[in-house]
Length: 304
Ligand SMILES: Nc1ncnc2c1ncn2[C@@H]1O[C@H](COP(=O)(O)OP(=O)(O)O)[C@@H](O)[C@H]1O
Ligand SMILES: [Mg+2]
Image 1 (tube, rainbow, N blue to C red):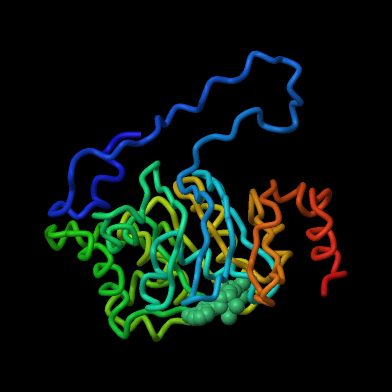
Image 2: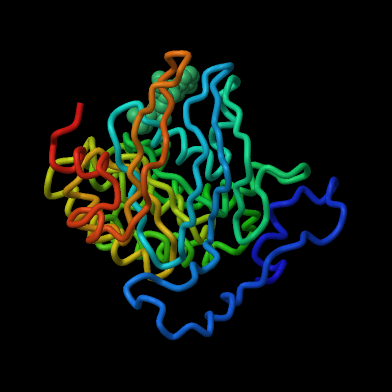
């Protein structure tokens, strides 16, 4: 990778020099030609990687020792029982947990090889490059046009009216909502249906030019048709982004994701309920031949 991708994460005032980042080249394959072909011999460096990530709320450890590697051009799903830490993990990937005063992330989270929790990294810049879409669509009470241009402006956009128009159209096109709103760009974002509002929020996230989009149960407030539309959109977007989605809907994970991370709740000696990553496996394998018994119990409904 080049510093081009990540230099804007660092607050220039406290930047102390170029950040050491691993090469974007995958490591050389081992010579051993007998390696089993179904398992990748090496794992590529991901867009986002977590290493030994623990997340606390005050003294409560909500998730323990999470190691994940999210790839570009893939949809990754996070599944598991309620309270296992899916949202907590997702929010730690773009420092959204910083907004919760008691929350604390330990371990390392890298974005293009750079630790987003390192001193000097600006969390606002992190959130621009790693966008987020929430469970409940949350457009601003402003026009459709203003909802999009806001995202661009916080990214420093100072273009002409024509350039702004292009940018708005491009984001709405990518979010597959342009045709539905192009004749009413000055109407309130809140006048749209729930499914349209969620696609507007996806367009707003895209307008800051991220390459990762985090989505926390983005369809759970939507009807089945609007859900299908968002799922189709995710499949289109993955050509240009890495998408990480929390879902409580296993069918949704099975339909859209390339890889699925299953989290479970472990009861500690002190009686604390801490979330742990059980496995992160290609989705078709996770739902047909999971590596772990706990995963099998969960996906077959024998759980808890
Ligand atoms: N803001 C918070 N303050 C304190 N504890 C929290 C907070 N958010 C979540 N938790 C706790 O962290 C654990 C994981 O929660 P969460 O990430 O919301 O799980 P999930 O999204 O899998 O349902 C739960 O025990 C939950 O009660
Ligand atoms: Mg959640």
